[in-house]
Amino acid sequence: MTKPEIPLPPMQTVSTGLVVAIVGFFSSFPIVLQGLAAMGASPAESASGLMIAAIAMGLTAIGLSLLYRQPISVAWSTPGVALLAASAMPAVGFSEAVGAFLCAGALTGLAGLWRPLGRLAAAIPTTLAQAMLGGVLLPLCIVPFKAAVDLPWQALPVILTWFFAGRINRLFAVPAAVIAAAIVVVLNAGDTSVAPSHLMAAPVWIMPTFSLASALGIGLPLFIVTMATQNIPGIAVMRSFGYAPASGRLFSSVGAASILSAPFGAPATCLAAITAAMCSNEDSHPDPTRRYWSAVMAGVFYCLFGIFAVAITGFAVHADPLLMGTVTGIALIGVLANATHAALEVPAEREAAILTFAITASGISVFGLGAAVWGLLAGGIAYLVARRAR
Image (tube, rainbow, N blue to C red; front, side, top):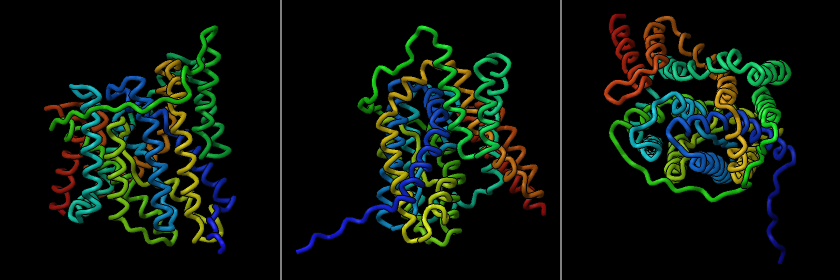
């Protein structure tokens, strides 16, 4: 009796998966650390959040891609953690933020299971969602240029590396900047050792605390920005390459992954958009039926990166906060450019979009609700009034 053959991934998909994981992880892990720190996470909790976020998106990508035999690329919500980085710390601290992460994950899962909520999330005008995202990103993208004045010998090498590497290959511009930042940290350490004390560590359980203010001020905007800029575009990217993803099942799956990973500090697991295109195009594999292996292998590498996340975090604590802000800011400039372009694309909706953008960028907080909520609310009212007038 012959043993059944175990299918092996084509080598082309292994290399594609490695590139996807490098781009997905190293282009945005500083943003994750900034977002968690802004929410009040300790270094150990930040390391745990980064670790579990990477492992969650890796395992989810592996499971979904093997189950549906489609290149389902999964990510953490880069726009979502940027929202956290620009938000005020909850009153109770990180445990309250974790409660908001659970709320956002539950809403994502519900959007997949209950169609009216999914349709409601999809009905939010793209211009307003992108304007809200742009307003969140603007303060973060200004930091590198402030750092270039206040910390020139550390910030400028990183900015210049990002700029010139982007002229060669845009996908590797931010990873190149991360390498430049690491070199800067080592050179400025002097006799101080920057080697992390541990290569691996156990995840940290954070008991969630729930409040209406954090649910509305953090959880709801996190859900909206993740659905509008990651989950829904991720489905659209896959469809553009001829695949037929079951959107409801995928939304509920990443929502469940978010719920399971949130108590360990992970903000949100979602469908990917940019790396979905990398896994779905012909460079992934000539045969469309075998491209799912690229997403599977990316998931494997994400898990490996996650296992050693504590070492990355341990090294990052030696960096000047302005240097970390520089890496975060330049990593988001491309996202900001796309968001502002999409926000202003429809002339009839520009006034509502710019209102959303300006209020969100202001950073105001009223009645415990952050600027993103007020920006989207004001922009939504302006949008409806203008539409009724037309």
